[in-house]
Structure formats: structure tokens, C-alpha cells
Length: 399
Image (cartoon, rainbow, N blue to C red; front, side, top):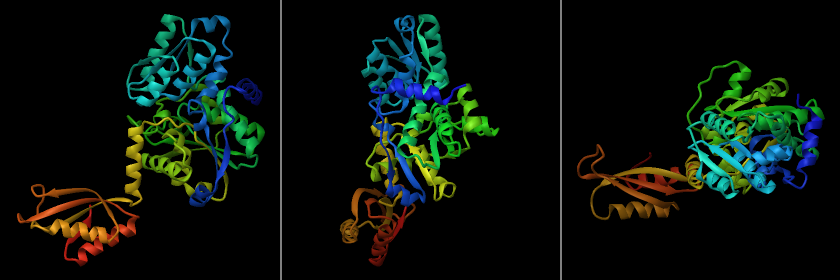
């Protein structure tokens, strides 16, 4: 069974190999969530994820014979990069099997570290099975992403650093995929401070650990923006540790995760992927659960596809009322569009897009539905733009 001394030994091995990342308070997030929020910036690691802690701890302990054979790993991206990077540093051959849905940025970065990337299967389970086949057929050492004590011990060093920087934390909130990070952190944190609360977070689309621990049968989804924790079945080692040491498990939805990504980008000026923002998403969704507590969050990774990020930012602007779509019904006569745009400009909104709907509308044939996508200051500003249009005799509404 994994113990505190295993994690402290891992910390010694990792000294000088990975960053001791900052763990600092976010005053703005604290004000918004009603608890004192401390962020552990694991997205600042060289591979932009905590995963290289476990990978490094595993690889440096391989025997000379195992190093000569090389390693194979399965991952949706962050474990892949961690293994690839440290294998390259140590001069080992690394083969990485990744599901086909893996974001391109993670695939290319993994290749950039010198690994042989194999895209196989639509799920982590299918990729894992193929990696096992390669291990057996080519004699490669399989480096599991979470269900391995050396991996778990490496991830647990995050908690050692957090409690050294902020020794009076009441609670640690940690995202769960296979459970390697929370298992290691819970082992370390509970040994240092038995009274500290450990809360795990999963996405509603992949509640595998939640189902295993709570005995529920919530359905599994197909995809999530938190692909780093899209694990269909948790590890056996990690599940036992979570059952014994983790105090509670919470679920968050896709909207909560999107909101957390945008908040971290706007407030902390830090880029965090879906899995890395799950902890903050839990604070957003369950504020009463953490009210008044000193809460440590792990920003576990920052590898996000740029196109996905652009979409999330735009959707976040819509939720905040800073991007809105309104419909204005008007007579289809020369000059009316100019009058509409002038009123919008007078109200201080900026027009992003204009669409004339003549055919796809139930209005009378001599009328037109004008759809405007507007940049605004918020929901009150949208309401003011609509009032101004209505005051000038136009029928206007939010779409």
C-alpha cells in the first residue's frame, strides 16, 4: 500500500527534474466563490501538466534492462507528453498510443518530444488495449497513466508542495479521471494533516469513479471538453485509495467547465484545459459546499486545442451577455437597415454580424427579419439596445 514515505522519496527523485510550481491565493476568485481559493499552477510545468511528475518518477526507477527495451504508454495527451519528454531526456525509446479524438496540439507536442505516436481507437480503453498489445509484441515496458504506485507517488508530490506553501488549507479539490492525482495527493495530505478534506471532481459525462465509489449507475457519455479525465473505468489501486481517503465526490457539467476556463483566462490570465478547470467548476456549481473554507485547487493542465478554446471563449461571452443575437422585424424598404444600425450604434453596441431573413420567416412578404449579432457590455446593455429599437417603432427581441 502506498505511504507517505513513497511520495517523499518521489519528491527527492523529482528535485531539479520538474518545477515546484506556485501555489498562491486568487483574491478575485475567492470573492466570487465565497471561499478562500489557492491555485496550484501545474499548467506551468514544461509539458503544461502535472503528469510529468508520475512519468519521471516511474522512468528513473527502471532497470538498465528495462531502459534498453523502451516504454509504451496510452494517453489522451498529458501523460503522453510527460512520458515522451522524460523518455527523451533519459535516452529511452517511447511509443505512445493515443485515441483518435485527441486534440491535435497534444499529438504534435508528443511527437515533438521524439515519441512514436500511434493513433488508435475512439476511447481510452481501446487505446489502452492496443498499447498492451504493443507491450507484449515488442517487449516495451508499459507505463500506465494512473494505476501504478510509482505514477501515483509522483503525482502525490503536488500535495506535499501545496501544504508546504499553504499549511492551513481546509480542503483540496482535485479532478479525477483514472484517479492517479487524487490518490497520490490524498495519501500525502491525509498523512500530513489527517483532518484535511479531500474532494474529487468528475464530469457528468464520465462519472466512472463516482459510480464505483457511490454505487450509482450514471450513464457514460461519448465526449467531453475535459478529455483529460474522460476515463471509462477507474484504476484498481486508485479506486481503493479513493474509497479509503477521499471524503466526497462531486459532478460538474460541461457549462460549469467552460465557465471555469473563461474565468481563469480572464481573471488569472492563465490558460487551463477542461480537466484542469474541473476543480473551479465544482466551486462554481457547489458554492455552499465550500463556503468560508480555505480551498486548494490544482490547475492540472494547460494543453487545450486553440479552436476549442476560441469556441469556449465565444460561448462564454454569450453566457455573460457580452455577445448577443437580436432580431429586428421591419418593412423591407430602402433606408430601414441604416436606421436600425444607427440606433444600435447610438446605444453603444458594436455589430458583429448582420443577416437578412426574407425567405425563412413567417412575416408578411413585404417585411424582413434582420438578425444582428452584437458585442455589448452585458445583459442590461442588451435590454437597453432593444428598448431603443422599440422606442423608434421597430419590433425587436433577443433570439
